Length: 170
Image 1 (cartoon, rainbow, N blue to C red):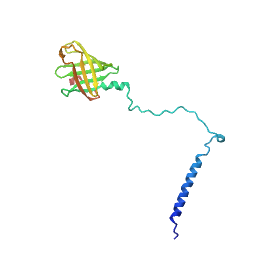
Image 2: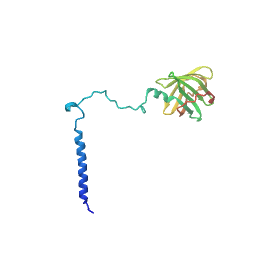
Image 3: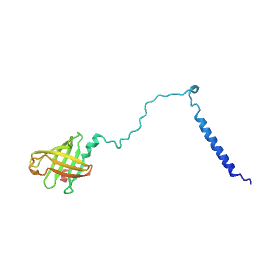
Image 4: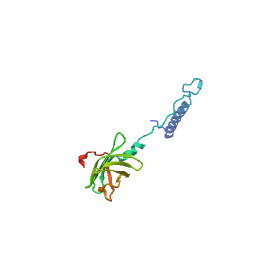
């Protein structure tokens, strides 16, 4: 049995790797089909990088932050439901524990917040604005309705992005 020295195996391996590298490098400089060794320039449309819309916040998405179900901060039960309609307005249900329920409330988003109009339990027209501070909605009624002597604002915390517009819950 003939013993091959280790340095001979390493030498053959290194020579093989060098041959492979040189073959690849010389192949990179060959003509890829142009006539007479000319470089071919091909015109194309600009390539745009794909844009992910996953985290892009649109104006419509900002408006939808109001939509959802809210529990009253004082009793922890559902008291405010806000749903955006296809027309871009809002349908709102407001329940104030042991005081009043407003089930035919319409609202529009303005610079002040979500402004609404409603018919008070005494039959008079009332309104106000709903503002958000993160997930807490503050419903502030216009002064003047007799049921709100000195108390005009009520707070609700968001529990769901999906409103429950079922009137029987109130």
